[in-house]
Amino acid sequence: MTKQITTKEPELLVDDHNGIYIAQVFCQTFAAYITNMDEVKEDFDICLLGPDNEHYFDAWAGLMDNVEFTNDKGEKYSVGNLGEGGDLWAIPEGYDFENEDY
Image 1 (cartoon, rainbow, N blue to C red):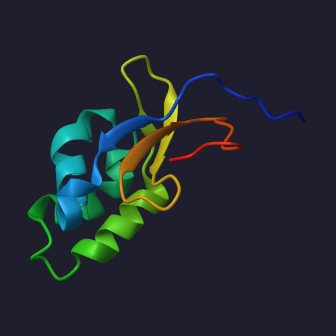
Image 2 (tube, rainbow, N blue to C red; image 1 turned 180 degrees about the horizontal axis):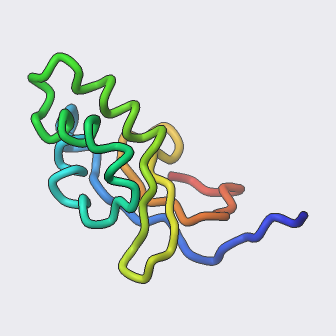
């Protein structure tokens, strides 16, 4: 089986200047692009509450491990960080990370 490489580039979703609020901003802004909301609803709702909730960071980790995300065209993406930075990216399925400097 050959791995399909995409020519699409990662898209910045939430930049790291949001700090501990990245999860909350992501949920407030991109809910419509989560295709498995039924599966991640509990973690999503906790993240919407913000970092004052004692389960916020655990819920964010759970959301990132399980979220299924698409763009306006229905193309699948993963959601996460690239490199050492704290920015949150939509990463196209099949994206080749070689020689990237994020």
